[in-house]
Image: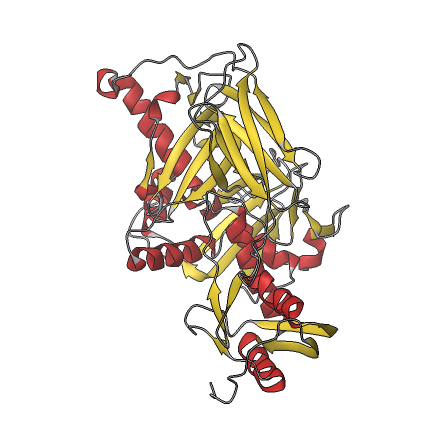
Length: 463
Protein backbone atom coordinates (compact mmCIF):
# COMPACT_ATOMS: atom_id res chain seq x y z
CA UNK A 1 0.00 0.00 0.00
CA UNK A 2 1.36 3.46 -0.81
CA UNK A 3 3.46 5.17 1.83
CA UNK A 4 1.80 8.50 1.03
CA UNK A 5 -1.09 7.30 3.20
CA UNK A 6 1.08 7.72 6.26
CA UNK A 7 -0.85 10.38 8.11
CA UNK A 8 -2.33 9.76 11.56
CA UNK A 9 -5.82 8.27 11.48
CA UNK A 10 -8.66 10.25 13.02
CA UNK A 11 -11.37 7.73 13.98
CA UNK A 12 -13.77 10.58 14.77
CA UNK A 13 -13.66 11.84 11.18
CA UNK A 14 -17.14 12.09 9.61
CA UNK A 15 -17.44 9.92 6.50
CA UNK A 16 -20.06 9.00 3.89
CA UNK A 17 -20.03 6.16 1.37
CA UNK A 18 -22.37 3.96 -0.63
CA UNK A 19 -20.90 0.66 -1.90
CA UNK A 20 -23.42 -1.93 -3.08
CA UNK A 21 -22.56 -5.59 -3.68
CA UNK A 22 -18.80 -4.96 -3.68
CA UNK A 23 -16.12 -7.34 -2.44
CA UNK A 24 -14.43 -6.57 0.86
CA UNK A 25 -11.16 -6.02 -1.00
CA UNK A 26 -12.72 -3.40 -3.29
CA UNK A 27 -14.35 -1.59 -0.34
CA UNK A 28 -11.04 -1.45 1.55
CA UNK A 29 -9.25 0.01 -1.47
CA UNK A 30 -11.97 2.61 -2.02
CA UNK A 31 -11.87 3.66 1.65
CA UNK A 32 -8.08 3.92 1.47
CA UNK A 33 -8.22 6.13 -1.58
CA UNK A 34 -11.10 8.34 -0.46
CA UNK A 35 -10.06 8.90 3.17
CA UNK A 36 -6.28 8.32 2.93
CA UNK A 37 -6.34 5.27 5.19
CA UNK A 38 -3.87 2.44 5.34
CA UNK A 39 -5.12 -1.09 6.08
CA UNK A 40 -2.65 -3.85 6.93
CA UNK A 41 -3.74 -7.50 6.79
CA UNK A 42 -2.94 -11.01 5.60
CA UNK A 43 -4.96 -11.76 2.46
CA UNK A 44 -5.13 -15.48 3.34
CA UNK A 45 -6.94 -14.81 6.63
CA UNK A 46 -9.70 -12.42 5.50
CA UNK A 47 -12.74 -13.13 3.27
CA UNK A 48 -11.64 -10.57 0.67
CA UNK A 49 -13.88 -12.03 -2.05
CA UNK A 50 -17.05 -11.77 0.05
CA UNK A 51 -19.53 -9.31 -1.47
CA UNK A 52 -20.97 -6.70 0.89
CA UNK A 53 -23.03 -3.54 0.98
CA UNK A 54 -21.83 -0.56 3.02
CA UNK A 55 -24.03 2.52 2.99
CA UNK A 56 -23.41 5.30 5.54
CA UNK A 57 -24.04 9.03 5.58
CA UNK A 58 -22.19 11.50 7.78
CA UNK A 59 -21.16 9.22 10.61
CA UNK A 60 -17.80 8.75 12.41
CA UNK A 61 -15.17 6.56 10.76
CA UNK A 62 -15.02 4.39 13.89
CA UNK A 63 -18.73 3.54 13.66
CA UNK A 64 -18.40 2.89 9.92
CA UNK A 65 -15.58 0.39 10.49
CA UNK A 66 -17.72 -1.26 13.18
CA UNK A 67 -20.53 -1.64 10.66
CA UNK A 68 -18.20 -3.11 8.04
CA UNK A 69 -16.18 -5.54 10.16
CA UNK A 70 -18.51 -6.80 12.92
CA UNK A 71 -20.61 -9.14 10.71
CA UNK A 72 -17.37 -10.68 9.38
CA UNK A 73 -15.86 -11.28 12.85
CA UNK A 74 -12.90 -9.06 11.93
CA UNK A 75 -11.05 -7.07 14.60
CA UNK A 76 -8.94 -3.98 13.92
CA UNK A 77 -6.29 -2.20 15.91
CA UNK A 78 -4.86 1.28 15.31
CA UNK A 79 -1.09 0.84 15.39
CA UNK A 80 0.82 3.96 14.39
CA UNK A 81 -0.70 5.15 11.12
CA UNK A 82 -2.05 1.72 10.14
CA UNK A 83 -5.32 -0.07 10.75
CA UNK A 84 -4.23 -3.67 11.34
CA UNK A 85 -6.95 -6.22 10.54
CA UNK A 86 -7.26 -9.78 11.79
CA UNK A 87 -9.91 -12.48 11.88
CA UNK A 88 -11.37 -12.98 15.35
CA UNK A 89 -10.55 -16.40 16.81
CA UNK A 90 -13.78 -18.17 17.86
CA UNK A 91 -13.72 -20.32 20.96
CA UNK A 92 -16.40 -23.06 20.56
CA UNK A 93 -16.72 -23.38 24.32
CA UNK A 94 -17.65 -19.78 24.92
CA UNK A 95 -20.59 -17.76 23.74
CA UNK A 96 -19.79 -14.08 23.31
CA UNK A 97 -21.38 -11.11 21.66
CA UNK A 98 -20.11 -9.80 18.31
CA UNK A 99 -16.45 -8.80 18.42
CA UNK A 100 -15.60 -5.22 19.30
CA UNK A 101 -12.59 -3.61 17.58
CA UNK A 102 -9.61 -3.26 19.92
CA UNK A 103 -9.11 0.46 19.47
CA UNK A 104 -9.42 2.47 22.64
CA UNK A 105 -11.98 0.57 24.72
CA UNK A 106 -12.86 -2.97 25.71
CA UNK A 107 -16.12 -4.60 24.61
CA UNK A 108 -18.93 -4.08 27.09
CA UNK A 109 -20.20 -7.42 28.38
CA UNK A 110 -22.08 -8.68 31.40
CA UNK A 111 -21.07 -11.76 33.33
CA UNK A 112 -23.91 -14.14 34.13
CA UNK A 113 -23.44 -16.73 36.90
CA UNK A 114 -25.43 -19.96 36.69
CA UNK A 115 -25.79 -22.59 39.44
CA UNK A 116 -27.03 -26.05 38.46
CA UNK A 117 -28.84 -27.76 41.33
CA UNK A 118 -30.40 -31.15 42.08
CA UNK A 119 -34.12 -30.46 42.56
CA UNK A 120 -34.49 -33.39 44.98
CA UNK A 121 -31.51 -32.90 47.31
CA UNK A 122 -30.50 -29.28 46.74
CA UNK A 123 -26.92 -30.36 45.99
CA UNK A 124 -25.02 -28.73 43.15
CA UNK A 125 -24.40 -30.76 39.98
CA UNK A 126 -20.89 -30.83 38.47
CA UNK A 127 -20.15 -31.89 34.88
CA UNK A 128 -23.54 -30.85 33.51
CA UNK A 129 -23.42 -29.99 29.82
CA UNK A 130 -24.64 -26.63 28.54
CA UNK A 131 -25.73 -26.27 24.90
CA UNK A 132 -26.83 -23.42 22.68
CA UNK A 133 -30.05 -23.67 20.71
CA UNK A 134 -28.09 -24.14 17.46
CA UNK A 135 -26.80 -27.51 18.75
CA UNK A 136 -23.32 -26.30 19.78
CA UNK A 137 -21.82 -27.22 23.17
CA UNK A 138 -20.98 -24.13 25.25
CA UNK A 139 -19.26 -25.87 28.17
CA UNK A 140 -19.76 -27.84 31.38
CA UNK A 141 -20.42 -26.89 34.99
CA UNK A 142 -17.47 -26.89 37.37
CA UNK A 143 -16.86 -28.97 40.53
CA UNK A 144 -19.24 -26.71 42.51
CA UNK A 145 -21.96 -26.94 39.86
CA UNK A 146 -21.37 -23.39 38.65
CA UNK A 147 -20.99 -22.01 35.14
CA UNK A 148 -20.40 -18.45 33.96
CA UNK A 149 -20.94 -16.83 30.59
CA UNK A 150 -20.28 -13.34 29.25
CA UNK A 151 -22.92 -11.70 27.06
CA UNK A 152 -23.52 -8.20 25.76
CA UNK A 153 -26.07 -6.37 27.94
CA UNK A 154 -28.77 -6.62 25.27
CA UNK A 155 -27.98 -10.19 24.21
CA UNK A 156 -30.42 -13.01 24.93
CA UNK A 157 -29.48 -16.66 24.54
CA UNK A 158 -31.37 -19.94 24.94
CA UNK A 159 -29.39 -22.65 26.74
CA UNK A 160 -30.15 -26.30 27.42
CA UNK A 161 -28.75 -27.92 30.57
CA UNK A 162 -28.19 -31.68 30.43
CA UNK A 163 -26.77 -34.41 32.64
CA UNK A 164 -26.93 -38.17 32.18
CA UNK A 165 -28.78 -38.62 35.50
CA UNK A 166 -31.27 -35.74 35.13
CA UNK A 167 -34.02 -34.56 32.84
CA UNK A 168 -32.78 -31.76 30.53
CA UNK A 169 -33.97 -28.18 31.07
CA UNK A 170 -34.03 -25.31 28.56
CA UNK A 171 -33.83 -21.72 29.83
CA UNK A 172 -33.64 -18.26 28.23
CA UNK A 173 -30.74 -16.26 29.71
CA UNK A 174 -31.02 -12.46 29.58
CA UNK A 175 -28.30 -10.39 31.34
CA UNK A 176 -30.37 -7.20 31.13
CA UNK A 177 -32.95 -8.63 33.54
CA UNK A 178 -30.93 -11.05 35.68
CA UNK A 179 -27.23 -11.69 36.43
CA UNK A 180 -27.59 -14.90 38.46
CA UNK A 181 -29.63 -17.99 37.63
CA UNK A 182 -30.41 -21.20 39.50
CA UNK A 183 -31.20 -24.12 37.20
CA UNK A 184 -33.00 -26.98 38.94
CA UNK A 185 -32.66 -30.39 37.31
CA UNK A 186 -35.06 -33.21 38.16
CA UNK A 187 -33.41 -36.62 38.70
CA UNK A 188 -34.46 -39.32 36.28
CA UNK A 189 -36.64 -42.11 37.60
CA UNK A 190 -34.02 -44.71 36.75
CA UNK A 191 -30.81 -42.97 37.78
CA UNK A 192 -27.64 -44.64 36.53
CA UNK A 193 -25.71 -46.43 39.26
CA UNK A 194 -22.05 -45.66 39.81
CA UNK A 195 -20.68 -49.06 38.88
CA UNK A 196 -18.17 -50.23 36.31
CA UNK A 197 -19.50 -52.67 33.74
CA UNK A 198 -17.16 -55.06 31.94
CA UNK A 199 -18.36 -55.37 28.36
CA UNK A 200 -16.32 -58.52 27.83
CA UNK A 201 -18.16 -60.13 30.72
CA UNK A 202 -21.47 -60.01 28.97
CA UNK A 203 -21.06 -61.39 25.45
CA UNK A 204 -24.79 -61.23 24.77
CA UNK A 205 -24.92 -57.54 25.64
CA UNK A 206 -21.89 -56.91 23.46
CA UNK A 207 -23.58 -58.60 20.50
CA UNK A 208 -26.70 -56.48 20.96
CA UNK A 209 -24.61 -53.34 21.38
CA UNK A 210 -22.73 -53.96 18.13
CA UNK A 211 -26.07 -54.40 16.38
CA UNK A 212 -27.34 -51.19 17.97
CA UNK A 213 -24.17 -49.33 16.96
CA UNK A 214 -24.50 -50.37 13.30
CA UNK A 215 -28.16 -49.36 13.15
CA UNK A 216 -27.74 -46.15 15.15
CA UNK A 217 -24.44 -44.76 13.85
CA UNK A 218 -24.72 -46.47 10.46
CA UNK A 219 -22.22 -48.43 8.39
CA UNK A 220 -20.77 -45.62 6.27
CA UNK A 221 -17.08 -44.77 6.14
CA UNK A 222 -17.78 -41.79 8.42
CA UNK A 223 -19.70 -43.95 10.90
CA UNK A 224 -16.75 -46.36 11.06
CA UNK A 225 -14.70 -43.52 12.55
CA UNK A 226 -17.24 -42.83 15.30
CA UNK A 227 -16.64 -43.95 18.87
CA UNK A 228 -19.26 -44.14 21.63
CA UNK A 229 -17.38 -43.10 24.78
CA UNK A 230 -19.94 -44.35 27.33
CA UNK A 231 -21.60 -47.48 25.88
CA UNK A 232 -22.60 -48.72 29.34
CA UNK A 233 -25.48 -46.22 29.56
CA UNK A 234 -27.38 -48.23 26.93
CA UNK A 235 -29.42 -51.21 28.13
CA UNK A 236 -31.39 -53.37 25.73
CA UNK A 237 -34.47 -55.52 25.71
CA UNK A 238 -34.40 -58.24 23.07
CA UNK A 239 -37.67 -58.81 21.22
CA UNK A 240 -38.83 -61.37 18.66
CA UNK A 241 -38.38 -58.79 15.88
CA UNK A 242 -35.16 -57.15 17.11
CA UNK A 243 -34.12 -54.94 20.03
CA UNK A 244 -35.22 -51.79 21.84
CA UNK A 245 -33.99 -49.68 24.72
CA UNK A 246 -34.74 -51.15 28.13
CA UNK A 247 -34.75 -47.80 29.90
CA UNK A 248 -37.76 -45.53 29.63
CA UNK A 249 -35.73 -42.51 30.66
CA UNK A 250 -33.40 -40.72 28.31
CA UNK A 251 -29.73 -41.70 28.14
CA UNK A 252 -27.00 -39.32 27.03
CA UNK A 253 -24.59 -40.94 24.61
CA UNK A 254 -21.23 -39.26 24.15
CA UNK A 255 -19.94 -39.84 20.61
CA UNK A 256 -16.76 -38.67 18.93
CA UNK A 257 -16.84 -38.52 15.14
CA UNK A 258 -13.24 -38.52 13.94
CA UNK A 259 -14.33 -38.36 10.27
CA UNK A 260 -16.23 -35.06 10.58
CA UNK A 261 -14.43 -33.55 13.59
CA UNK A 262 -17.35 -33.33 16.02
CA UNK A 263 -18.21 -34.56 19.49
CA UNK A 264 -21.93 -35.36 19.83
CA UNK A 265 -24.05 -35.46 22.96
CA UNK A 266 -27.13 -37.48 21.98
CA UNK A 267 -30.05 -37.58 24.40
CA UNK A 268 -31.56 -40.83 23.21
CA UNK A 269 -35.17 -41.20 24.34
CA UNK A 270 -36.23 -44.04 22.04
CA UNK A 271 -34.63 -46.71 19.88
CA UNK A 272 -36.51 -49.58 18.26
CA UNK A 273 -35.14 -52.10 15.77
CA UNK A 274 -37.96 -54.17 14.31
CA UNK A 275 -36.88 -56.55 11.55
CA UNK A 276 -35.21 -54.17 9.06
CA UNK A 277 -36.98 -51.03 10.29
CA UNK A 278 -35.14 -48.68 12.65
CA UNK A 279 -36.68 -45.83 14.63
CA UNK A 280 -34.78 -43.60 17.03
CA UNK A 281 -35.64 -40.32 18.70
CA UNK A 282 -33.75 -37.79 20.76
CA UNK A 283 -31.85 -34.52 20.79
CA UNK A 284 -28.30 -34.01 19.61
CA UNK A 285 -25.73 -31.30 20.35
CA UNK A 286 -22.33 -30.79 18.79
CA UNK A 287 -18.94 -29.40 19.75
CA UNK A 288 -15.83 -29.18 17.60
CA UNK A 289 -12.95 -31.59 18.13
CA UNK A 290 -9.47 -30.05 18.08
CA UNK A 291 -7.58 -30.99 14.90
CA UNK A 292 -4.03 -32.31 15.25
CA UNK A 293 -2.84 -30.20 12.34
CA UNK A 294 -4.05 -28.22 9.32
CA UNK A 295 -4.12 -31.36 7.18
CA UNK A 296 -6.68 -32.97 9.49
CA UNK A 297 -8.73 -29.76 9.56
CA UNK A 298 -8.85 -29.72 5.76
CA UNK A 299 -9.89 -33.39 5.73
CA UNK A 300 -12.73 -32.66 8.18
CA UNK A 301 -13.93 -29.78 6.03
CA UNK A 302 -13.84 -31.99 2.94
CA UNK A 303 -15.72 -34.80 4.69
CA UNK A 304 -18.35 -32.37 5.97
CA UNK A 305 -19.01 -31.12 2.44
CA UNK A 306 -19.36 -34.70 1.22
CA UNK A 307 -21.72 -35.58 4.07
CA UNK A 308 -23.91 -32.58 3.25
CA UNK A 309 -24.04 -33.11 -0.51
CA UNK A 310 -27.09 -35.17 -1.43
CA UNK A 311 -28.35 -35.37 2.17
CA UNK A 312 -32.01 -34.91 3.11
CA UNK A 313 -31.12 -31.49 4.56
CA UNK A 314 -29.42 -30.51 1.29
CA UNK A 315 -32.53 -31.58 -0.62
CA UNK A 316 -34.86 -29.55 1.63
CA UNK A 317 -32.67 -26.44 1.31
CA UNK A 318 -32.64 -26.89 -2.48
CA UNK A 319 -36.45 -27.13 -2.44
CA UNK A 320 -36.71 -23.93 -0.40
CA UNK A 321 -34.50 -22.06 -2.87
CA UNK A 322 -36.07 -23.57 -6.00
CA UNK A 323 -32.73 -25.15 -6.92
CA UNK A 324 -33.66 -28.86 -6.91
CA UNK A 325 -32.44 -29.56 -10.45
CA UNK A 326 -29.50 -27.14 -10.27
CA UNK A 327 -28.23 -28.85 -7.12
CA UNK A 328 -28.23 -32.25 -8.85
CA UNK A 329 -31.55 -33.73 -7.67
CA UNK A 330 -34.27 -35.39 -9.73
CA UNK A 331 -37.72 -35.90 -8.20
CA UNK A 332 -40.32 -38.46 -9.31
CA UNK A 333 -43.39 -39.84 -7.52
CA UNK A 334 -45.32 -43.11 -7.45
CA UNK A 335 -48.55 -44.38 -5.92
CA UNK A 336 -46.73 -47.51 -4.76
CA UNK A 337 -43.81 -48.16 -2.40
CA UNK A 338 -40.39 -48.72 -4.00
CA UNK A 339 -40.58 -52.52 -3.66
CA UNK A 340 -43.88 -52.57 -5.61
CA UNK A 341 -43.51 -49.71 -8.06
CA UNK A 342 -41.95 -51.77 -10.90
CA UNK A 343 -40.42 -48.59 -12.27
CA UNK A 344 -43.74 -46.76 -12.70
CA UNK A 345 -42.96 -43.18 -11.69
CA UNK A 346 -44.22 -39.85 -12.92
CA UNK A 347 -43.00 -36.31 -12.43
CA UNK A 348 -44.77 -33.48 -10.64
CA UNK A 349 -43.82 -29.80 -10.40
CA UNK A 350 -41.66 -29.20 -7.35
CA UNK A 351 -44.05 -26.48 -6.21
CA UNK A 352 -46.76 -29.13 -5.66
CA UNK A 353 -44.56 -30.73 -3.00
CA UNK A 354 -43.93 -27.46 -1.20
CA UNK A 355 -46.28 -25.22 0.78
CA UNK A 356 -45.54 -22.09 2.79
CA UNK A 357 -45.50 -22.48 6.56
CA UNK A 358 -47.25 -20.23 9.08
CA UNK A 359 -44.08 -18.28 9.82
CA UNK A 360 -41.82 -16.45 7.42
CA UNK A 361 -39.00 -18.67 6.18
CA UNK A 362 -40.85 -21.90 7.04
CA UNK A 363 -41.87 -24.48 4.45
CA UNK A 364 -43.96 -27.66 4.41
CA UNK A 365 -42.96 -30.74 2.41
CA UNK A 366 -46.19 -32.58 1.54
CA UNK A 367 -47.13 -35.35 -0.88
CA UNK A 368 -49.78 -38.11 -1.07
CA UNK A 369 -47.31 -40.19 -3.12
CA UNK A 370 -44.07 -42.03 -2.55
CA UNK A 371 -41.37 -39.55 -3.54
CA UNK A 372 -38.31 -40.87 -5.34
CA UNK A 373 -35.24 -38.61 -5.17
CA UNK A 374 -32.12 -39.28 -7.23
CA UNK A 375 -28.95 -37.32 -6.50
CA UNK A 376 -26.50 -37.19 -9.41
CA UNK A 377 -23.83 -35.09 -7.71
CA UNK A 378 -22.17 -38.05 -6.01
CA UNK A 379 -22.01 -41.83 -6.43
CA UNK A 380 -23.11 -44.35 -3.84
CA UNK A 381 -20.58 -45.42 -1.25
CA UNK A 382 -19.43 -49.05 -1.52
CA UNK A 383 -20.56 -49.63 2.07
CA UNK A 384 -24.10 -48.76 0.97
CA UNK A 385 -23.97 -51.45 -1.73
CA UNK A 386 -22.93 -54.01 0.91
CA UNK A 387 -25.79 -52.90 3.17
CA UNK A 388 -28.25 -53.00 0.26
CA UNK A 389 -27.28 -56.57 -0.67
CA UNK A 390 -27.59 -57.69 2.97
CA UNK A 391 -31.05 -56.10 3.17
CA UNK A 392 -32.06 -57.65 -0.18
CA UNK A 393 -30.53 -61.16 -0.21
CA UNK A 394 -32.23 -62.02 -3.51
CA UNK A 395 -29.97 -59.50 -5.29
CA UNK A 396 -27.17 -61.43 -7.00
CA UNK A 397 -23.97 -60.46 -8.75
CA UNK A 398 -21.67 -57.47 -8.50
CA UNK A 399 -23.26 -54.04 -8.17
CA UNK A 400 -21.42 -50.91 -9.24
CA UNK A 401 -21.89 -47.52 -7.56
CA UNK A 402 -24.52 -45.37 -9.22
CA UNK A 403 -26.34 -42.14 -8.47
CA UNK A 404 -27.71 -42.00 -4.92
CA UNK A 405 -31.33 -43.16 -4.87
CA UNK A 406 -33.74 -42.47 -2.00
CA UNK A 407 -37.49 -42.63 -1.38
CA UNK A 408 -39.61 -40.89 1.19
CA UNK A 409 -43.17 -41.64 2.31
CA UNK A 410 -44.91 -38.89 4.22
CA UNK A 411 -48.15 -40.77 4.87
CA UNK A 412 -50.42 -38.52 6.90
CA UNK A 413 -47.43 -36.51 8.07
CA UNK A 414 -45.54 -33.49 6.81
CA UNK A 415 -41.97 -32.26 7.09
CA UNK A 416 -41.79 -28.70 8.37
CA UNK A 417 -38.43 -27.09 7.67
CA UNK A 418 -36.74 -23.72 7.26
CA UNK A 419 -34.79 -22.29 4.35
CA UNK A 420 -31.56 -23.76 5.73
CA UNK A 421 -32.96 -27.29 5.43
CA UNK A 422 -33.37 -27.71 9.20
CA UNK A 423 -36.32 -29.95 10.12
CA UNK A 424 -38.56 -28.17 12.64
CA UNK A 425 -41.13 -30.83 13.56
CA UNK A 426 -41.05 -34.39 14.90
CA UNK A 427 -42.18 -35.99 11.63
CA UNK A 428 -42.57 -39.42 13.27
CA UNK A 429 -44.67 -40.85 10.45
CA UNK A 430 -42.17 -40.01 7.74
CA UNK A 431 -40.43 -43.11 6.38
CA UNK A 432 -37.20 -43.02 4.38
CA UNK A 433 -35.96 -45.74 2.07
CA UNK A 434 -32.73 -46.25 0.16
CA UNK A 435 -29.71 -44.00 0.59
CA UNK A 436 -31.32 -41.61 3.07
CA UNK A 437 -32.41 -44.58 5.19
CA UNK A 438 -28.82 -45.88 5.21
CA UNK A 439 -27.35 -42.55 6.34
CA UNK A 440 -27.56 -42.40 10.15
CA UNK A 441 -26.03 -40.46 13.04
CA UNK A 442 -22.51 -40.94 11.67
CA UNK A 443 -23.45 -38.55 8.84
CA UNK A 444 -25.17 -35.89 10.98
CA UNK A 445 -24.07 -32.26 10.78
CA UNK A 446 -24.89 -29.46 13.25
CA UNK A 447 -27.38 -26.72 12.43
CA UNK A 448 -24.48 -24.28 12.29
CA UNK A 449 -23.09 -26.12 9.25
CA UNK A 450 -26.54 -26.12 7.60
CA UNK A 451 -26.59 -22.33 8.04
CA UNK A 452 -23.20 -22.02 6.31
CA UNK A 453 -24.38 -24.22 3.43
CA UNK A 454 -27.58 -22.13 3.21
CA UNK A 455 -25.49 -18.99 2.76
CA UNK A 456 -23.74 -20.59 -0.20
CA UNK A 457 -27.09 -21.55 -1.77
CA UNK A 458 -28.42 -18.03 -1.27
CA UNK A 459 -25.35 -16.60 -2.99
CA UNK A 460 -25.83 -18.97 -5.93
CA UNK A 461 -29.38 -17.69 -6.36
CA UNK A 462 -28.12 -14.11 -6.68
CA UNK A 463 -25.80 -14.97 -9.55
